[in-house]
Image 1 (cartoon, rainbow, N blue to C red):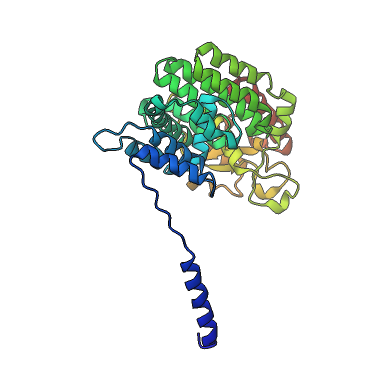
Image 2 (spheres, rainbow, N blue to C red):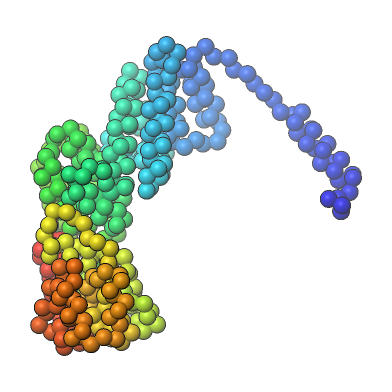
Length: 387
């Protein structure tokens, strides 16, 4: 402040005073909440654009029937917003967009607010906010990958798979389906059977083959609306059947599957795409398939390179991997295959014990890794991820 001249300070204060004196305050007196909301929307249309959910809130509150001077919607609205903000994908706009797609069809961003208005008559605003409250709970279940019901282990596992695969485009369909389940339009066993098929398709389409989902948008969005309007199990099944028509061929799948790779020595594999997350997903699915239990829980594991990672060659590829408890994995580096096999056959992981019986286990080479990669690909395509 020592370098600031007094005349500069005086000039700034004068400009600030002049700006304050130019402020105009207009008081608009209204007699009820509806009139206030209408004024708010009208004035805002000439100013800064609000978020879609703010406009929706304003519209719903405008026609709320206030009882005893109390707003019945306010607490419900706060619960909706808070529940979304606390979930793993805390995007309020995304929730209202996915709700819109499920209930009214896919709309451009600039059309969403008008779509809510046009589909919510003034006398039905209470039904709309009740619906939003109900669906927000379902949406949190989808985003978090669990409904926190212990008996729903299988369902929760499939929901968690969608999250691991990053499949957000499917949320409008899942809203419609889980709402139907809540309303007893589909039983739990059938729901899980079809959800497994969905997970299988997207595990192949996105998880392994890395195909963009924009080619599926029209089918997904139109089905979400159909399921919402007139749900039936056959309609849900047909949707998955239509998805399956777009399933990559085994040859294309096999090429991508065999390229799944992970290594701590990236300099040895300069032309290889390392993706630890996908490798872990595949090993987890393989373990569950061999276990064939109803818990749908795989303990935490580290990725064991059967052929030592540092040895190069095919050591970085999926056919060279099995799961091991983290504390045991670090003890095997540099060990002979005889020593490794002894530990593998006593492992807590079923897929690791099964590998210990592999005919080439004690003579493990790059050719063995290539053969196992292809055999695993066929197992996944024909059985584990059979749609």
